[in-house]
Image 1 (cartoon, rainbow, N blue to C red):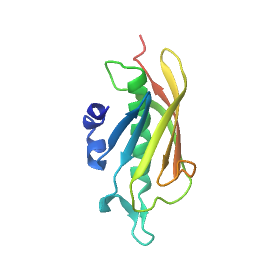
Image 2 (cartoon, helix red, strand yellow; image 1 turned 90 degrees about the horizontal axis):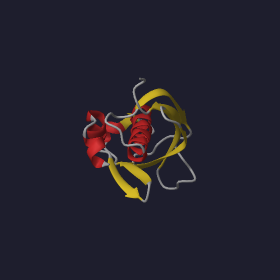
Image 3 (tube, rainbow, N blue to C red; image 1 turned 120 degrees about the horizontal axis):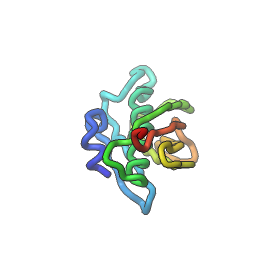
Length: 131
């Protein structure tokens, strides 16, 4: 799965790393100073957190439904639940429902405790081009 993330320039910029646990992919965004959005707190930038969530969802869909092309987002909603501290962030995505052309996916990002996410994503992805 690292091969997919390595093909995406922003994933490389974020330094995303992935590991596979069965059919479930975990993506880690290691901390870097450039990811700070609010230096007064300090807190992670919401854009980098949203990108982590979306790229994790794309990678999970691509893992479960291998296609010639990368899954394309139809719509994405991100909920910010708490400030991200200046440390690594973990993320997992689950495919809740999938048809022939569209997959409905959720993802959660957390730092220390998976039961206390810092952000969540709900999205629909196009699995293949319409014929």
